[in-house]
Length: 231
Image (cartoon, rainbow, N blue to C red; front, side, top):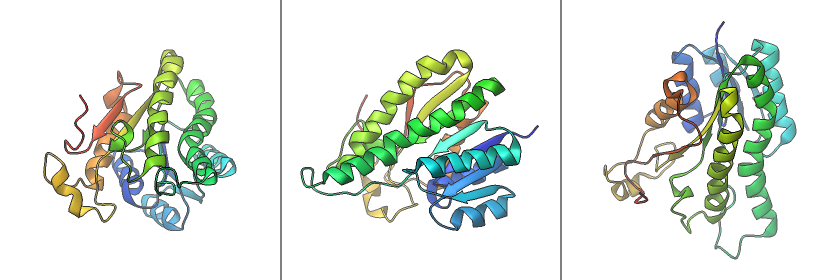
């Protein structure tokens, strides 16, 4: 039976690259994104898609239900969303802090609630949360994102402890500056003196999503070209 990978933020950028990489590895794909891009890519890859946003519990349930009705299983999940509203640290409104929480932490928790029973029944699975290189070296460029994405790594540790005995793993992927965005000017900040590619991020994500990383859980893998200094 074919394995199935569900990808949110799966219309472009890193999410789309992960969908392509997992398809190459023989996985069926179920994709979600806010625009028609997920539908276009799903058609190309022979998968299924549903438009939706990370902060909507209804949309998350919709894509999981679509994957199950189409394929009957979910083996791997990539949670990926954009950055919440930016701003000066104390100028970010309460509403935007709440939105950041919905987009980043509650999004991951809600997805875990939906797919964990499925993976338990199957005998295992893997969840990878795409966050940011700045989760452990916070940047004033995007404060709300940093605060909540650090929380996702903490949640992943707790989840790993709870569901490791069920053979369900959760890890985080922490990308550095990547060519999905117009960030070429920041390439010199990395030890490798260039930005990364979405294909490089996708290969790292696929490693964590598949049995190639079967003894890795609760970890936060920085794929940043040596940008961060944290040891």
